[in-house]
Image (cartoon, rainbow, N blue to C red):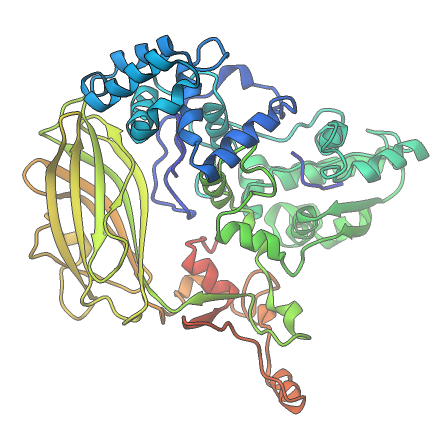
Length: 573
């Protein structure tokens, strides 16, 4: 049986600031919480209401700064007292010299009562001080924010299938695999919503099925790209061996039952047996005929799932995990790190009986993606914090600010995206300004700055591999929808920068590597097309036309394979 078992964040366990499966990003060393090793990570239903209020209502009401301070200052858990915030202000090199902050402190000492209400005029200064304290302390010890960030980091993957350094999370195989699949159905309050296969397992056991003899489960890592499960975990070869043993112990052929995404994994397994070298060596289809009675999919998203597509493409509640278990930002980055999510991309095949032709439309825009990987400074100390700030001419929103990192050779792993609608098919006329900032207590100091321009390859500019320095005269040649690597380029006299740039015009062609040919549902190609001449003719005869987005913006329909290319989801997935 198969079922779903069970950048940007604050704290030291920082996931790259990403919204993409970005193959170029290097993960920093992660601090693994040792007490989690070999254990299940579960929710504390007692603490859940407080967490929701702090991270949900606080975010909406603008009161989150108070929660941040409570996490750091309130040592005894009875609310922030005057002496606690006084000690916090005195130990901070900026707050202790700020006259307005000191005025608020004197008012709080005089009036008592709700201490934090006196600090409303300086709440932004206190919030920044809390972030400085968190960074210096290496993260907040046992507070909710740290726990949320660690949880998201432990559930995130690199390149859609690999583990972060120092972290390894796998399904629980206890009890013939049944423990992992039925675990959530044993948790009060949420068991009705998260029972998954529990509702099927319990009646089977009551009916007389015996775990290990004629009933086993094959939990899988539902985060991992299905095409990488065998390479990383030997999942499908182990499943073949397990099914052989089950057949022998039960004395009958096996019925494979699967639920939700597990249906896609089970279907992949059946094809893997017939197509892979390992499966063919065991007989391929003859092996299936010998050991498998039937395949019983339950609510399988064979033609995609709109909810899964939506969660991957835009921030949301992470299937109910945010804001209670993870914050919205970390949760989005976490989901975007899972290589399994393309299994849920909607297929046009189930639109043929509707007036819609495509699942996804994207705004007609030109887009510039920049991955800032790392830097090396000569005029910065090991104790200095630096950030990268970017802006693009002709694009609103001003300057975007990356993460703050410490030391002479910081690793940023930041992703920036700039988009424009006018001239969406062109890059000419847009320049990128890069500022490297030494962000210290005295004030911001620009360590390096350059404004570079771009040109389509073949129309001038320098090939990315030949760029050694970024100056105001630099013109970089870009191929549409292809990453350009700028490695160790000089920015001013005291800095070198490693970054990747990709320009995607609105009419970008599909890269050859992403062409699936005929394909199959969910993988692109003709099997995922949701329209035809016959369909359009039938709609016309009924006085209808195919549905398209309306509004002040122009939109382009996107095929499955184009979404894979736009989202940088490798063809091997």
